[in-house]
Image 1 (cartoon, helix red, strand yellow):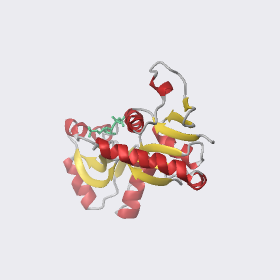
Image 2 (tube, protein in one colour):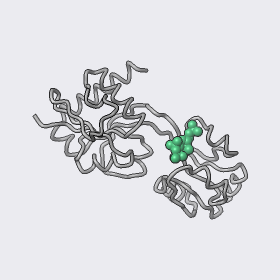
Image 3 (cartoon, protein in one colour):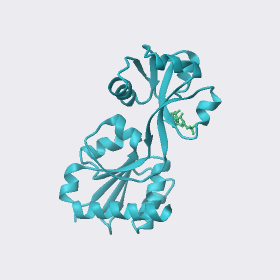
Length: 215
Ligand code: PRP
């Protein structure tokens, strides 16, 4: 039997996904060792392999078939634009992709002014402003702490993830427009879905029923 390889985004989401898998009897003891420097973990009995990767790389591994299945946030799926099948919404890590800034930036948005938009998600920002709003903007790619940009005068607004809203609030910023809701999704490689349909569908079904038990 061939191995099915599952790519997980490093961090809290990987832990939550492993907990869901464990509920359906899919475990990986090797992964529980906190001190391990190993990158790939195997469950020989179930012929499964797991690996943890940087979040933004999960769709890449899945598109190329290096992983058959991936679990990652829909923000990353939208930003990376990889050719993968999205098969299940795990409804974990729910948050929103928003345009945010100081209240004073509301007017620039309403008047369709040419403004600067800072974001870790330049493709999502571009798609929103160019294709949905038909507003010409300058997009500036940042790698983190994006809330700084309007405070120090780098941009008028940001496109970023808002979960509780406390980062915005503590920095005198607010949600100006909502782009879309976000949550963790299960993605599958297109060829794997054809060649290993039965086993992959079973893993997805197991995740779905564990998700329902959790709810
Ligand atoms: C994310 C996001 C916001 C914050 C939102 O940042 O980019 O900054 O969380 O959460 P809140 O609405 O609950 O305050 P993250 O912690 O991932 O780090 P980053 O700033 O380096 O992107």
